Length: 310
Length: 272
Picture: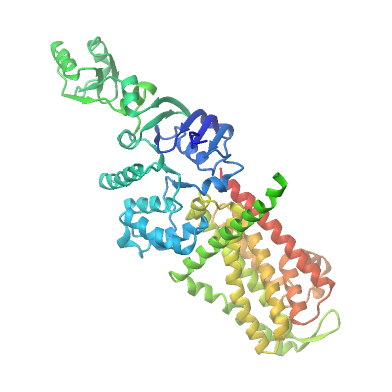
């Protein structure tokens, strides 16, 4: 029992009519981990999260949460989960504090304990000064932090965060990250979905890359980069030129070349050496950038597409 | 072993469930303290009073006393008042169960947050109904006090009528929620209002159903407000019969079916 995973999925499937949102995934999440589902919109991350949160029955495969069956033991499991949904679902008719204390009652937490925890949690998410305000005037970042505080009121063993920083400005994102990092340090098991590679890199010990309902890779951010990308990436831009013509001209430089609509990525162990090789071939890019490989590159390599499509 | 454990577990589950239902009602009580919602709630009291005064007492002066189907004679106001009580129990419950319930479910997404907790859809429905009944019973108590003061019923029968009006609220609350889970747009609520007003006018409220043409009488007699009016009128005029029990049973069945449909549909909508 002690080593039993908190989440155990085998061949998990979710269909909505003809559409298959999750197409047979295997996942194990262990206690104390920070685990991520990385993938673009529509990859099946949220559907997976809803199944894990026991609000969406699986169509097929097997799923155990905390060793229990989510269909039969839903209320019991949900009592031990903390859920921060993608869209804020705060109660606009209640104050900031009430949003936590009233929610606590849904878990059967006594009023007095609820009040104590609300005060602690509001301090934790730095909203104690807004305790008696209504929810509506709060900024997006504050609302998200309140939603996180609310998700923690039952002292959950497992916290599910669906796109915790989507739609937030950079400063607000960093505040949320910092709080999640603190939670991780306390040993809370975190499961999050994201389409931001920097978020996955910052917060996750281990992650799976999802694409079209399937898991295409699994590992720690570092492992994934080592396995599916090179150490460095050379980014080249050539002004307004059509980039396809450079494919041949760059052949042989680095290990692999990816042509994107606006730039060319040359995957190489040594980016500077690759840049020199480009120069030696009399090519004159309008801009040259050498950077470290990221999960974005992993995703691009695995799926042939970028993560954030616009 | 399994059988000996089953009962305590069932009791524990039921207790947990009751607590969660209460928590949903408590949420509504917390919400009503804020904003101008109190005024809306209080305004609901005046409608039946205005009808009672204008029609029951006003028109009643022209109609005079009134002979019921069983031969007993009551004042017209005493005939109309229980119908107003039943209608206000219906309106109070429907206001919460249709418009507010729909807004919370589809617009505010309140229940999406609730189903992520141990709460189950039928517990949410029952908790919401709890608040609807509290709201409805406030109107009923005030109206019954007025009826006793005007000599339209006795205090003892008024207490019985209060419980009956709770049952009426329960039945219409269940039906209202069931309808709300099927409604797609706000415009559909206009139809609900029209039906409600039709029921209000023709459920033996202002004239006994015996005076209607036979076909219409049959139609009226199968609708829930007629059953509610008859039940409450039997109580406030002190003429209980086996028929009264039939009316009560009808309302219980309607409440149970309404809640079952509502819970099923909520499950479908919230737990896709």
